[in-house]
Length: 126
Image 1 (cartoon, rainbow, N blue to C red):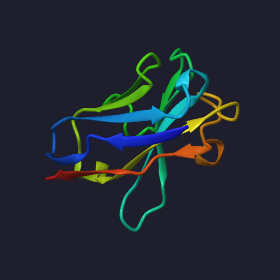
Image 2 (cartoon, rainbow, N blue to C red):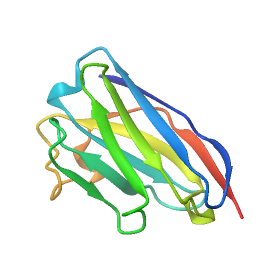
Image 3 (cartoon, rainbow, N blue to C red):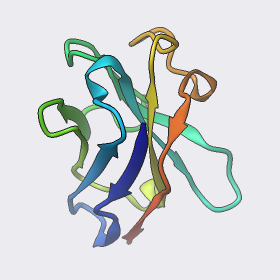
């Protein structure tokens, strides 16, 4: 499956953005989906994941209560709604897909995701 993330941009602290991830080449209905981010000079970190059917979600502690991951299997889309953004949320955000190797919420390490999209940059100004 090929993934393309979009929706990044520049936003002030406290603002909101909605990231989208469009999938092609396969239906995502059999994949767990995730969002990761990487800030300049830092390692890639987990943000959120959602099970193939959408019944289970999990979030990094740093974004819990502010970010919401969702999916629309009929449209082959995954979303990340980001509210109350903070400067420390500034990063390039990547969507990822895993089939048979990702367990939400207990097994969402990056290594378990086999497909990755190009990133979309989110910049939060203070």
